[in-house]
Image (cartoon, one colour):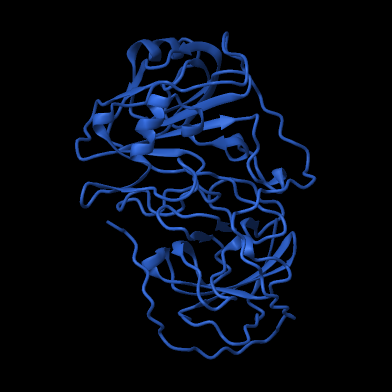
Length: 399
């Protein structure tokens, strides 16, 4: 059952009153059979990770062997990179820079007290408790790998006692503290239980691999630099479970909308230098915290061979996330992002509410060079003009 339906209805032309135009060179692009691999450019100083090595497994090979809850209660596991609704009741859960972690949603059997397990053995480096009393952990498993779990309702009493001996978490408000590897967990160990939140997060960091990122200076979180899918590091039996539940949970019908396109478990590989694909920043001083201003052109979608767009720039007239954007017969409309370069000229993307969670209209984009792009949006416009032009309302974004 498809959640999102694309219609072919055209709502009629809207006349533009441009005030400034850019020269365009609409070069015909040859079809590209596969998305090219990202090419790293010289980046700013690399962030130095702080590490606490586990007592064992101190090598770069690692394998998860336990799923972090009972399969009986699994509804869906959101693939990495999915920007749309994680369930029908949570329309915008993804971080602005793409979902760099799995959201594990429970099905209609959800209740308080469901056990949450450690998917792999390791040492707790970091622990936190939120004002809503939900726990989160970062667990080091070897010299290059770690994982984190978040939105755990209650802790296992033995584990809580061990942690409280190191840090007092009884104070009100958000508390974060280094545990410095002094508390160990084993694969399959019960670490906590659900409360009222119907999902929890499972993220994996592999510091031996860097995601497709042009400028690491924009990023302060290792999960965005090195985030990988759990599928890549799981045992064969665990891969079978994961593959069965990748998708989003339709909580109105209690059904899974499966992932049938893209890498299994998703990917946060984004930037491809020389193309539109990836993340563009409104501010040179941007970092990867919530509420920042970015445009993201993603290479794949959940269940179609299409792509996704996110705009979170209030200066533009359109704001939202859109999926299932398909190629149009007109070459300069809805081109896949990796087909757009600084020789393509102005391209347009038509979006409406049937494509995701966002406002409706036309997005005009032109790459100025490999590291600058001009974007403008036209709210309520549903056709691509024959000679597209920018106005003074356009903005310049940066790699």
